[in-house]
Image 1 (cartoon, rainbow, N blue to C red):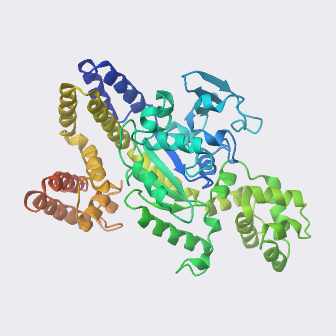
Image 2 (image 1 turned 180 degrees about the vertical axis):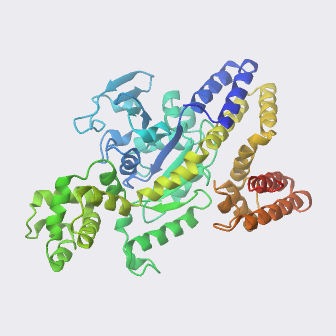
Image 3 (image 1 turned 30 degrees about the horizontal axis):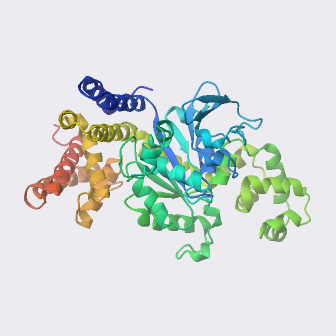
Length: 507
C-alpha cells in the first residue's frame, strides 16, 4: 500500500532520525515505518455479547469470525488482505503456525494448541474491504473469562503499569497498533464503555480516542422496545436513531457518531448467509393470513411451534440467520411485493440492517482521512519513543524535527488533529461553545459540516469561514491563555484554508 503524503512525510522524518537515535528508539521507528506502509488499522471493541464478531463479519463481507463463545473469541484476531486465505496462530515467543479455515470458511473453533502460549491470530482473506482497512476483532470487555479480559484491556488500552509493560512485544503490537476504533455498544452505555474509549491508545503511544479516530455502533437495535423511547411513535428504527443520538451525547467527545445497526441481519445479508431456499421459505410464510403471521412473530417459541407449511427445522434456521425482527422485515417486504426475487429480498434486508450508514461513516471518518490519522498516530509514537529513551539530546532532536515538519503548510491537518486531541482529552480547557467549534472543524471531512452550515450556498460558506478565521485570530492574540492560544492559531489557520479551498481570494 502506498502511503499518503502526510504518512510519507512522517516516514521520511523517521528515516532521517534513525541514525541520530539509540538502537531501541531506532527499532521503534522501524515499527512505525512498517505501520505507515500498511492499511489503516481499526480495532472493533466493546463489551462481551455486544455483537462485535458479527459486525466484523458484516464489514468484511464473509462469515469468518466465530460469534459463539469459544477458544477464538478469547483471542485478538487481526484480519488482513491476502491472496491466499489462511489463519496464522502467533505464539508469545514469536513462532507461527498456519491453519486452514474450517469447512464452513470460518476460523476453526478449536486451535489444537495451549491458549496460554498464544499471543493472537492473524487471518488473511481475499476481501476487497481489507485492501484499505485491517480489522482487529477483540475479546469482549466484561467477559467472565478474566484472563481474556485482562489481555484485551492491556493490549487495547495499554494500561500504565499493567499490560503495556508486562505483555510480550508480539502481543502488545497485536492490538496497540490500531489507529482507529469502532466501538460496539448496546442499549445501555456503561461507565467502562466510556473508560475504554478514554483509554484507547493508537500506535505505540497514548493518544485518546476522539471524533477523528472513533465511531460507535448501537448494535442489536432490533431488541429495543420502541415504546420505551420518547418521541419514537412506536417505530423501531426511529427509536433506535433517537437512542443512538442520546448515546452519542453520552460518549461525546470520544466518538464521531453513534449509528444504529442490526448486526445479525447485516451479517446474513452481506456474507451470503441468505439463500434462495431461505427466500422460498419466507414466501410460504408471507402467504399465510395476517393474523397467523402476527401471532407467529410474537415469540420464538410460537414461531417454531405454530402449525405452518414451513418445516420447524427451516424456521429454526431462519431464526438463527434473521431473528424474529428480520423475519418480520422480510415478510413486510414480501407483503408489499410478493414477486420479490431472492436477490432483491436480500438487498431489502441489508438496507433494513443499517450497515450502509455504518460503511458510509467509516468511509467519511476513517478511509477519507486515513493518511492524516495514520500520520498523527505515527507522530505520537515517535514522540513517545523519544520520551521513553531517557536521552535529553535525543528527545530534543526528535522534537525539533517534528516542529519543522508541522510548520509546513501541507502538514496543517496534523496540527488540527493535534489540537482536536488536546481539547477532547481535556489537556487544553476551552469554554464549551468554543470546544464544540473545535470538534466541528476538526471532526468532519466535509467543508459545510466543518463550518456548521450543511447544505448552505458557497457564498455563505465563504463569508462565514473568513469571519471565523478573523475571530479565532483575535482570540489567540487577546483573549486566550497560552495553551488556548496554541489551539486558536490552529483553528484560525483551518478556517483560512477552508476559505481558500472555497475560492476565497481568487479572481
